[in-house]
Length: 192
Ligand SMILES: N[C@@H](CCC(=O)N[C@@H](CS)C(=O)NCC(=O)O)C(=O)O
Image (tube, rainbow, N blue to C red; front, top):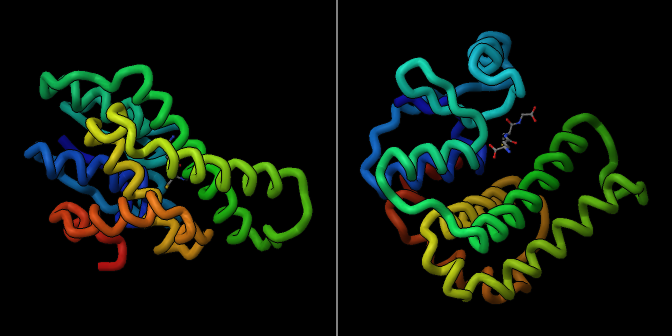
């Protein structure tokens, strides 16, 4: 199986870390999705023009949510419960808003402007982080490897891109510190 992605994408990193932990061989194709040639490769497999994309025997699976479901099924592991799906939705919502804000910054907008779009993203980012801070000790969260990986990838990506300060959220800070020691973290560090 091949994984189209980039070393910097937190969504791609989740899949890479989970595959490493579960001994699932993925050939990682590192793309620069804003270069003409690599963009062509991405678009050829995903009309939505986003990474990650998993390719298995010529079949493309788009979106990290579908990819993890595909890999869990393929490796005969239980899917996420509905409670866990909801927690993943919260992580995704935070991550999506941060991606939108980064793209706005790169497009030359002042994201500190008092504008509806920026205010909505900032509110969502702050509240989802607060929610995750108070729910990450629950059994449904703790017992789910993919949720833990996804949260770590979100937090580390926020640090890497210097997007927002979550250091006052103590449970998140403890979680981040403990998780950092894992081998898959080092292997997929976007700074390397
Ligand atoms: N819902 C998607 C989100 C993936 C996503 O936003 N990927 C970003 C990279 S981190 C991307 O490809 N962005 C390209 C764009 O927005 O044009 C997933 O879970 O895979």
